[in-house]
Length: 552
Ligand code: AHR
Image 1 (cartoon, rainbow, N blue to C red):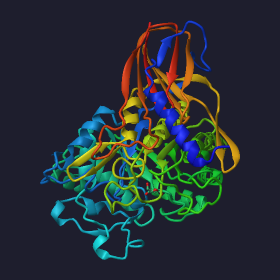
Image 2 (cartoon, rainbow, N blue to C red):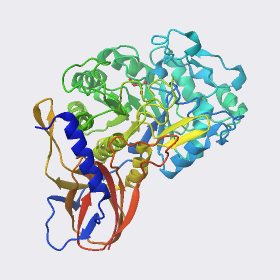
Image 3 (spheres, helix red, strand yellow):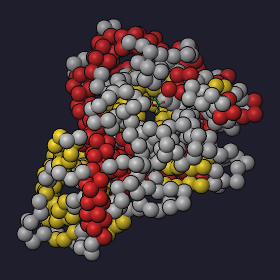
Image 4 (spheres, rainbow, N blue to C red):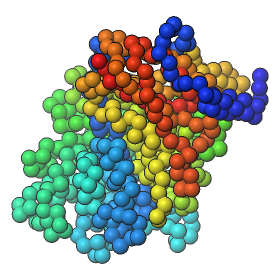
C-alpha cells in the first residue's frame, strides 16, 4: 500500500495528466465502451425545482455585511447606493432568487429598530459575533454600527430582483416586535406610523416581505429551547401577524443535523392544539454543515475541523461524505414530518449549508468564519445542489452559508478587491435548474475506493441531477474521484437532442482556488456537443459538469 504522500503525488500527477491530455472530453457513441452510464428518464418527472433552492444567506458576522456587501455611499469602491456593485452584478447573473437576513445567531440578538431611520443616528451595539471570547484586545472587537439595516437590505434585494427572507428574534425581543417588524415592512404608506417612518426613509412602497423565519437554531443560540418549548413559543409569536395583502410564509426553526426527535416533538406539540395548527407553517428549517474531518476520531467542534487549503485526497473524500449526509437528513426529516403532516403541507427549508473549516484561510485576516473555497468546495457545492434538485418535492428553499467573506462564500471582497470563488462559479453553472422539472436520473459508475486510516472506504463514482424547461434539458454531474476520469454513456429515455454544450469546472490541483491576485485560476470552460441519440462523455477527475441539451 502506498503511503499518504505517495498517494497524493500519484493522485495529483494522474489528475494533472488527465486534465492536460489532448483527448476530446466527449464523442458520439458508436459502441457502448464506457464504464459508466447516466440514464435520464424524461417520462418520470419528480416535481418542479423551486428557484429558491438556489438561495443565499447574509448575516451581520465578520466581513459579510461591512466590507463585503456594504461599502457605504461615500466609498471609492464601485457601489450602488452603498452596496458593492460587483456583488449586485454577479447575483443578477446567477438569478439569485432569495436572500436570508440578518442571521443566523445574530438574528436572535438583533433589534430591527436599531437598523432603521437616519444612519448617523443609529445606535452602536455589541454584535453577537464580536470575537471578544477569542480575542482579548478590544481594538479588534467587531461592533455593530447598524449602518446597514432593513431598508438597505430590502433595497439590495430589489436591485437584484431577489426575495428577502427575514429571520425574527424570538430569544430576546417580545412577540409584539415581530408584529411591528412585519408592519414596518409591509403596511402601506399612510396607514401606520411605522409605514410612515419607512416612507420618510425613502421607501414609500411596502417591502412586501413574504418569507419570515421564526427564530434561528432555537435549540441553541436562538433560545436554548427544547422542541416542545419552542413549539409553544412558535404558536405564541405567530398567533396573530398583520397581513397587508401579502400572505406570510413562516419558517419554523428546525433541527441541526440528525435530531429526528426535534422534528417529531416540535410538530407533535404544534398539532396537540389541533392539526389545523400545522397549516400556519410554510417550512421547517434544517441546518447541516460538513465540519468533522476527523474520520471518526472525535466529535469535538474545534478539534474535528479540517483545513480549508491544506488537505490530502482522504480529506477531500471525507468532506464529500460529510456533505452527502444531506440526502439522508432530507429523507429522514421528511419521513418524521409525515407522521404529523401526512399530506406534506410543510416543506423543508435548508437555510444553512456548506463546509465549515478551522480558521486560517481568511482572505482578509480578522474576518470571523471567513474561509477561502477551493475546487473541493466547488465539487461539494455541485453535489449538494444536485441533492436538492433530486428532492425537489421536499425542499422548498436552501440558502448557502454565507454569501460573501464567510463559510462557503460565492464571493470574497476586501476594500476594492473582489473575486468570484469556485463556489460562485458552480452557482453560475447550476442556475439553469431554477424552475425546471426535476427528472429521475439513474447513475451507474465504478465506486471510488480510498484508504481511511488503514480501512478500505468507498464513495459513489458519479452523481448529479437533471431538469427540463420546455425543450431545454440541463444535466449536472459530479465526478468526485481525485485522479480518475469517468467515461459515461448518457442516454435520454424518451427524447433525442439536436444541439448542446458542456461546461466543466476542474483543475489539475485539487486545492486550486480563486484569490484576489489570481481571480480566474479556476474557471468553467464550455464546448459544443455533437448531436446524437446517445452521448459518451468523459468527466474529468475532480470535476463539476453541466450539460445543456436542446431537445428535438
Ligand atoms: O453561519 C454561521 C452560523 O452557523 C449561524 O449564525 C448559525 O445559525 C449557525 O450555527
